[in-house]
Image (cartoon, rainbow, N blue to C red; front, side, top):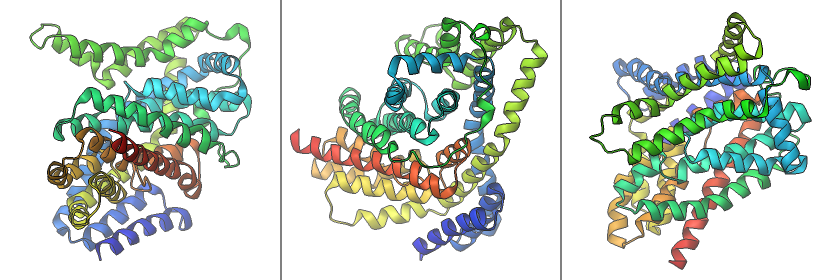
Length: 437
């Protein structure tokens, strides 16, 4: 019955948005109420659950998405993205652009959270797409596949790091095995899979792509590259400093403050305001006008993500993830495969990779210990499972759909399939490693 209600909720959401043309934010709220009532959540708690879900997801994303949009807009209109795109294509060759995007995504994905990497790299993707008239999904997906894999497989990202601790795994070995699995996962789900998606129609948000400027008006190569990657440099630098700086050091609180992604983006945007704005002969009023336009363009995206947070929280509060996990726990399946199945099922139900991974721990840990399963591989198995089945209750699904301006059907055929490929290839890699070690 629980599965049937979940199916009705997902189907209802798709019907409301695709057929009835209801705005996704309103559709999410209506389906959240339906799911809460149908799954037995007390009526007096449904509204509070929705509000908590919206608050939680916006508290972590609204600063990143808003500042990222402003930053991306300025990188675009200043000509910095045009300069960077030209250099990348000249270096890699137009045929190898998806591979170049994949490589960039993997490198920046190791230190960056997925959401930050997404909003910072999208302007670069769109600039290459529009300048060279390339298919947006085929160019963008390899980079986003790399960001997704690093988010789910590799420490120091939150979910794999937490799994390492709770499974009592070795951080270094898990990272080493994770890289070994990440490379084939990214290649297959990125350039190889995206090559089949060249005909998917996509008109990405033009807010992040400006009209092509003459060479004389473009910022210098160093200025363009340094400003664009400044958030990445700041995050890497502060993260490394936090790891090596003694806790008792008087500078530790300052470095921890500067390491916060929101603070990093504030610093980067402030620098870009001058390096790509004022020093490029734009007035402060004009630069602020760019930022205002950027916020207008992503306002609807913020609402949609907020709505997905409401549904995720309602489903979480009903305990549906624990119900599914308890049923799956009784199956007599190899522990590494069972861990993947439980995490993948919870991910499909809840929409959050982090919740899926951490919820799985309590159910699979006793089985892992009794069977003497390799804890490092269990971290990767659960991490791979937590990436599977991204659909309408996942904020990443909507980020991709709205930024790339896709239909729900084509988002399933591109984004959702990419996540499934990443997850399945990851599991296959875990099984192969388990047979070797």
